[in-house]
Length: 303
Image 1 (cartoon, rainbow, N blue to C red):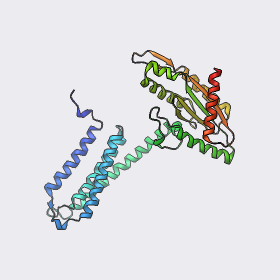
Image 2: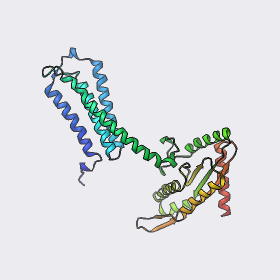
Image 3: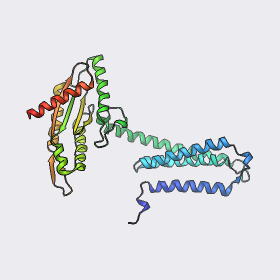
Image 4: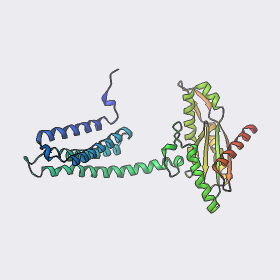
């Protein structure tokens, strides 16, 4: 199998980076005259070289982590221009250009200036991008982003994150008396589904369920994965009948959602057990989870 470099993501930007560094080094060595060792400021060289190296690290991190688009292109272009200036500033400690023109070394700052202008456009476009993403992730993050609490299977936050959010609601309840509700949703026969169709399909089912829940709750609500095949939904400042209605809507949507195998044949429907409680007095989040689990088991037995 022949590897194609053009299939590498951001191939043109990687090529631009390599070309810029190569041309900068070649022009400096070809046009400049080496300084005497006694004229080299070691600390300046280390500091300026460190700045150039860190800008290179930022640029590589941008190319490795960002998807293709104008924001990435502008970020990479601006950082590349800044890298050229910082690299010239570092090489200026080892080479002199006075034999060509005494003010030639002063031009090294202009690529950085142009790079900052390009980066300013990139920051504006990035702001627009993040505004859209924040709206998209609102039901998953609730105005706070900390990816150490993220569940890698579903993309939702974990029970630890939900505990922090419930603690905030409990504090508000103690201060203002604002009640809130919490619901737990549990996939029916998840173990049997994994046994029949495999763990990979099971993880896909969990991810789809998380997306289905976030699609059918309100923008002010928060969905997290609790554990195993269970999900938690927080309904801030919401009466019990409203929270139950939204939870039932989620369960109804799950009943008409199907998984498909590699032959596009439908698998078992994604059906859910549900329990919902209203928190009307301050308590520990652990107690809330225990009440939810108890009510969920009761609802399962009654079904």
